[in-house]
Image 1 (tube, rainbow, N blue to C red):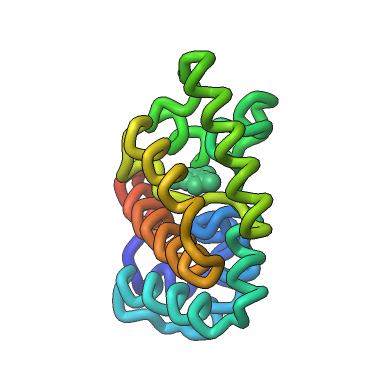
Image 2 (cartoon, rainbow, N blue to C red):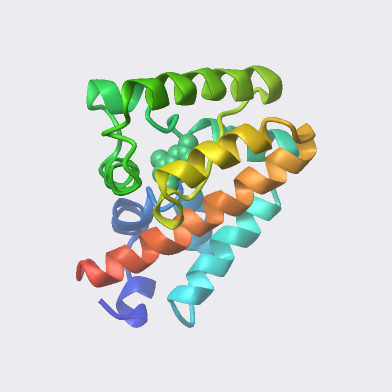
Length: 171
Ligand SMILES: NC(=O)N[C@H]1NC(=O)NC1=O
């Protein structure tokens, strides 16, 4: 599907295709649909990014809160979205040693207790060791720094999910 076809999609079909490029936030696809026509996929990505930037701080935190923990309950119960499951598996989150799993769980809880939103990192750009390192280091940041940092990671995840849609011929 080329960008002309994307621009011709009714809102419902557009949201079906792009609704999860920001995890569990189809409202973002539904909102940027009104910004058509897009010149390119990159322009669509920019529209999503600008929409996120326009949100209040609590809106940005809401986006972060839509993300499942890495190696968390949803992974254990098989309730991750397909995208998240593939990303987490690629970073080895589904095959942690017992000690790594308990360290991850402890740090995830510490992070959420401190900031009120979950730790978000683009799993496809990091391996297991780096994720644990970042999680531990980022627990020390200020809340505003972490909010911005988490949103940067959401945008990286979005870019890679858009690219995957192209690679899997869904676009
Ligand atoms: N918490 C968190 O970072 N979750 C995610 N990261 C990623 O790449 N996919 C996710 O679901």
